[in-house]
Image (cartoon, rainbow, N blue to C red):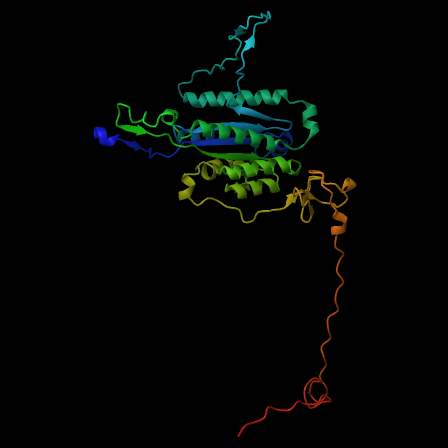
Length: 377
């Protein structure tokens, strides 16, 4: 094409930093926040998190945000607000196939504030309203059912949203895919290509043991590792093995602050840089990672366990029902795999030297001395 019209047409790549998507998983476990209320109340933590979100959006015009609440009995979207895209049928039950289009939920009205950027106001209003609905829908039965939180479901939602946003920001041009010469047929001499999206996940956790969700959390870790999505962990309270492994396997940042009341400072200094900026920075790292796993039978973290040779499931005891694997149903002979404690072999006694200063194994004693090497003249 260039040889025919003699016009130098080239694709100009955008040299600006790529847009960044930050998916935040907020642990809203009421049991854990009740123990942390004297140091850091939940309301103060949400206020600090809103400031951090505004800083992320302000650092790039194309940056995006997603907030998911990991509650005791479910994982709920805080932002963006999920919409019911399915239209409702008419209440009269007409059989003509007409549908009602005026029954869709409307966007909540945000009061105008000249001292606040409208995008920040819309985001803040959506997060606070959805969080209030989540607390109102929580019953005493939900709180008594489990003391932990649904981190596995929240991670799955975050990974799904990241995958969808990555497809929408894919640098593949639909018009150019149908016709490769359509991009060169424009009247402009420069064509700008789309830039791919960089994504990461931040988990603000306050719950302790998450061993009962070992399987779903590990599946999410493997999916994030395959898609090269770093998982950052901010552990405000408690301690868990799975989140340390998630941060280490995906190349994220793991921090457990000694003073949780400085939440905003930890967020701004350690978790605001995206994957592109971290290449030029020295990020904080952990001294050691606990790589212990949780058993599939009792969901307990074990040091030594029994592994199924078929599906690699881990068990803390060889006493399985009918000697069958709880995951794949294969027959296992774990009891025969137990090795008894080996008997200690007595150490050999050293030979004592005689009173004359010669050892019993040296020549000159009862042992005859060997002949020397013959000398040649």
